[in-house]
Length: 459
Ligand SMILES: O=c1ccn([C@@H]2O[C@H](COP(=O)(O)OP(=O)(O)O[C@H]3O[C@H](CO)[C@@H](O)[C@H](O)[C@H]3O)[C@@H](O)[C@H]2O)c(=O)[nH]1
Image 1 (cartoon, helix red, strand yellow):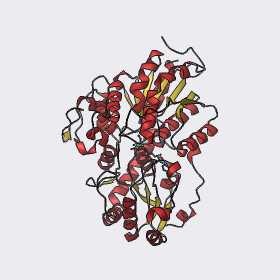
Image 2 (tube, helix red, strand yellow):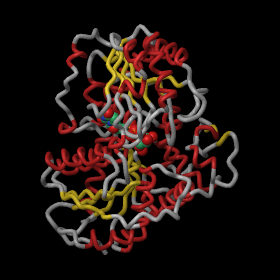
Image 3 (cartoon, helix red, strand yellow):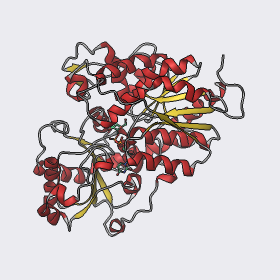
Image 4 (cartoon, helix red, strand yellow):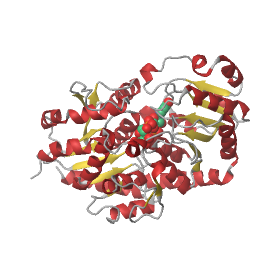
């Protein structure tokens, strides 16, 4: 029996977990569905962790006043759940999961009644029993690459016996144990690892897994996932990406400095929304930039959560370094419109922590990447970046917080990136492929169309 009665258009609720890396793809999908005249509800865990999330959500809701926003008020924090993990974004996942029983009253009262529920992979095993009880068709929006999805699906069968080299069935590229998100390897009994396994197992019960990737980018992986080679019984894996930045995300940039730079001459350095390198590592990076001939725009992040990131650039980098950097580029603390920067003709390369949204945005604008993974899924994403030829990855560089990468090495590697014509050509090719995928008749657009039809049938 369908949960909702017949209404004029399907009503879909979307629930991201926490942090901009998760909110952004959910909002882009929500915007796309709202543009197709779907009723859309977006639910977020409150209080939100960062200012960037509240600002982004407000901008979205002003641009899409027809979207219903629901606040999911979290149960009080229980410090006994995880003493080891102090990451505020992880604690928020955990708090949302622990508050899952509050979901039923919040969504049962939806008007018109919901036709489907789309949630984040991190919430999957906690939410599924609740939304399934309401007879809702359930989808996951997986915010990372298909490579990471294959690991998530397969991991439950290898959790107690992780070898140095992992062979995921159906995939020709072997995965090194060192690419796995560190908490999975460090302690398989940690809440992070336990939830990772529970979510991975739960995926088979979902109606579909939506992906921010496209067919021609990860063809072998997507095929293996959809042919049941990775895990038998996995629901359809539906690539609908790249999820493209919306109009409301564009900020009128004050970076007029950019307009004075020659084409392709600037290196953009940004480590996403929630990664702060150690001060020692930041200073090494600065030293590398001083030695370099390239101009740069560097988004400096000193703390994980933006509200706490209050120290001045000079305090973080030291007076001498700031003086030496001054004539070579810009160091900015705070949020920039990354899509806008990557689209600027002056940008020739991107030093990135390889969060998946950053990768898809670099593809969208055809900018080559120097992959410098810092944690989580980022080595799995780096392997995709290297394989498709969008960028380079020095896989001997340690995770963030590990062995320091020397400024000299950083400078040399950036030089290599900016001089690599093959990468530049391939980045332009990937940009064309990405645009083809979402254009009329393209693979992702066709999948999205099919998904919309499927959701209409759910009414
Ligand atoms: O000043 C800034 C900083 C970031 N961004 C945007 O913020 C997003 C950042 O997302 P992402 O590049 O994926 O990095 P994280 O914020 O670190 O995302 C988390 O979530 C991703 C999706 O699951 C994972 O791939 C990452 O490893 C994980 O850290 C991107 O859309 C950026 O354009 C800006 O617009 N301006």
